[in-house]
Length: 616
Picture: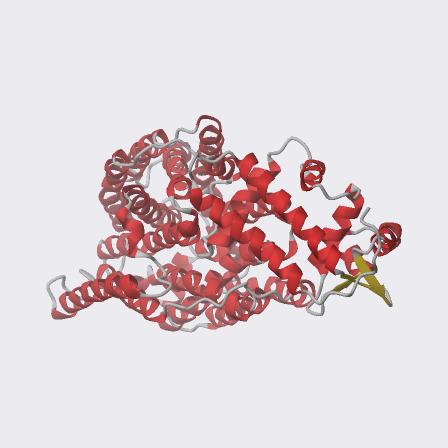
């Protein structure tokens, strides 16, 4: 949770500090890059880190992300020029992107499947906390310490995260060794940076018709074309082009990009207006941002509950986009005389519109994608939303900066903010047109469960279909009215008590590379004294399912076969309970693969020759 909080916090914490940073370091024309550099680097790393976690282990990937984030934080606070601040914000963004994905992925290593939906929801809620706390904390630091503490504050928290993770997280690698699409990632990174530079420098640093802008624009388009060609041939593409053959994915991706564009683009520059025009302190500007966040939280939570119960989702982006356009237009009327309550009301309107649109693209994609594409489809939508945010900050920043003279006055700030939001208002109408093409199809039970547990703030997808499938299964499993364990045991035909079967599964879960587990290890994982397990373990040894030597228990051949029967029964129960659409063979194949891997792993464990004891 702290790792996710660190990463999400730094998307917004600098917004209230930006006016002071510019006053201290200069470079108002580069204002947007303090945020954009972080977002671009974060976007690229969210694609890479999941693969690195599978290659080297999620613990190492998590720790490396924290250390990278700490280095970027320290030197961002130490920066003595806008250039160095932007450079180290990018370093910080690389660490932040890694933290966002691995914070979610390590849940699979430490939390049983049934509980993962609950923990994933809490992790996702960190986005909401960060959105509220970021501008407020930034303002407090500026008023009472220094803007540099907006970065230094990460260091003590990061040290705590490193220490706890180093001792508490298990070292687990992915089941497969993925092939990383380095060329595709490089091309999209260069193209995204080039296009962001075009939108950021055009009309400010260089004329729109200058050779630099035209050349950079043409080069970025060429890079995008090359990216598409490479993705069509890559063994494991970061964004498979086949996904765009489906109209639903294409529309959801465009909608996600537009919502990201409007959200951070609008939020980033409001504190500057509140401070420079309405005379608010940095802390007050952070507090005055709360109405926007409250509006966003309300509709994102309500829409998730309604979608879960009714299965209808198209109405939310349609209504939300119009409300978002209205909110942006209302904000374009702000001036020095606008009162507190009127400004707050305008912010609430924008927040209500954004909240209606935020989670719908993810729900739709998880509802319509083949399960073998669940991971890349989810991460693709997340990638495009973050990319939209970086473009939004850059474009809004260009409009804002272009209206400010060298010695800006209050009236020039009013003109800049009004122009920015007036230009931004049609974005809501664009989102409405896009949402018109969104096809509404009956929701799977899986998508309903995800919607019910969503906080509206979802972390980036992992890119792993297995992890996304586990997230869906966890959400559904938690909605069961009673513990399904006894029913699964009865279906398996295994003549063990529930306690014996449960302990057999725990021995499998805690078996190390050498294939055994101790009762102390079970105790540390369940907070139950090891002595409680001793009678049941002795029964399994007597029945020939386990062997024991010096307190180390391992499967016998009979124990392995019994475990395989339990997994088979779990597979059948899962397929029946999820009640997916008839003929959805993709889900069945994924569950079969998961069950087969569990059984294969158990049979690959070193086993002891079991005594010829009667089967109970």
